[in-house]
Image 1 (tube, rainbow, N blue to C red):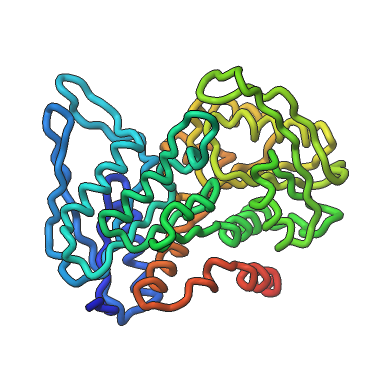
Image 2 (cartoon, rainbow, N blue to C red; image 1 turned 90 degrees about the vertical axis):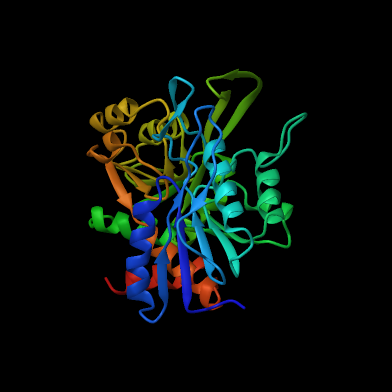
Length: 363
C-alpha cells in the first residue's frame, strides 16, 4: 500500500543538486512529509555496458527518479578512450535504475524535465518514433507517471494512454523572471508584443500573449524537404505575419535553443521591423554551435536577454554571459511531486493563470 508520508528521490547523473534543492523546497512546502534522497551507483565496464546499484531500500515507497537526458558534459571510459554520455545513455541509465528497484516500490515516477527523444515525436515517411517507443518502454517496466517540461508535442502521450503523463509549462516562472530583471517593461499592447518564431510555437507563445493581454505575431517558416545540413532542414521561406512592432518591446518564446539560428534570425527580423528591445524566453538552452552568435547579437543590440530555465544542464560559459538570465523551475517541480505523492490535483499548478494575475495585482 502506498505510503503518502514517505517520498524517495533517486537522482541520476547531473540531477544531484536538483534533488537536494527539491528536498529543501519540500521541507518548506510540506514539513510533515518525509522526503529522502537515495543514491544509485552506475558502474560501467570497460566495454561500455553498465549496471545500476541502489544504495538503500525503496520498498513500499513513492519513488521519483530524476533524469536529465540533456546532461552532455558527463564522461565515461569506453575501452581506452573517454566518451561523453548521450541522451541514449542517460535513458538507458534510467531504465537500469528502474530495473534495480525491482518492483519493490509502491509507485515509480519519472521526473524528466527534458523529455527523451521529444523532437522525434511523429513519423514522416520511413522514420522511427523514438519518443513513443521510449514512453511505451517505461510503461512496460512499471512506471506510473512521467513529468516533463514544455514537451515538443504533448500528443505523444497518446502512445501510453494508461500511464500518467504531465506536461508543465514555465510560463509563470518566465514572466516572473522577466519582471525581476526588467522592471521597466510595460505590459500592454502599446508597449509589448509576443512573436512566435514559427507556426509550431504558436500555442506556446499564445499562452504568453493571452496571459499578458497583448498582441501576437508569427513568422511563417517553410523548410526544404530535401536539403538537410548540420542536423536540420534548410529554411527556404521566412516571413512575418502580425501586428506592427515599431517601438515595441518583443518577447519571443521557444522550447529549445539548439544551434539557435532560427531564434536569432527571428530576433534580427523583428529588430528590422522596428522592435525596441528583444527578449528570448527558452525552456532548454543547448547552444550546440556555441555562444558567440548570441554574444555578438547582444553586443550589437539585437537581443537584450535570453531567459533560460534550469531544467537541464547549462554549460559554465553560458552562466557567465551577461545576456543570460536564469529561470528557476525546481520549486515548481517540488510542488508537482508534492501533489502527486499526496494525491492532490495538479490542475492548479499546471494552469498558472491565477499566479500570473496575482503577480501583476501585487505590483
